Image (cartoon, rainbow over the protein chains, first blue to last red):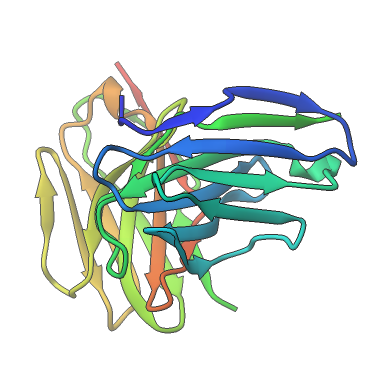
Amino acid sequence: DSGVTQTPKHLITATGQRVTLRCSPRSGDLSVYWYQQSLDQGLQFLIHYYNGEERAKGNILERFSAQQFPDLHSELNLSSLELGDSALYFCASSLAGLVVNEQFFGPGTRLTVL
Amino acid sequence: EDKVVQSPLSLVVHEGDTVTLNCSYEVTNFRSLLWYKQEKKAPTFLFMLTSSGIEKKSGRLSSILDKKELFSILNITATQTGDSAVYLCAVLNTGNQFYFGTGTSLTVIP
């Protein structure tokens, strides 16, 4: 158990819908990272937040957005869902922000878009 | 275009063998290279390498980075069935963006 929690574990929804994935980092970690893992694209970095502020953006679609709250938990919002958004979404946390150190991954949320 | 290429794509070995996994990269503004192990769940962090020529070791695993030739290797000695996993390589740039390779799937046969 990494200490990072993600909810829900599984999510099944329809095209065009909007969902919110939640991540709670390890106690004391200030950084949260979001990743998408699909069979055809592999693991892709989406976005990094540090202490409530966006630090880096990767291949995140405009339909996706994220935020990190004052209690340091983070949410990833996916809207206008398409079949291709079906994937495993991981969040990870680490202590530092500007210089990445060891990351701890949550168990993931499996999103299925029908 | 920034990219990370891992080889081989898959590997089957017997317990006790030594394996070498390769990761080459073309990423602008390189900061670090990271290795992860992924079994049937979330990735777990193995190493982060920033400087050339300095070997990082953890038990039977070791890794080294060559920033001139733009590659890294991950060595696993005396492999065990518990080493069976996908090994992912990622490069982090100075903008804190990650670029992942597609991974090497390692299967260790008893």
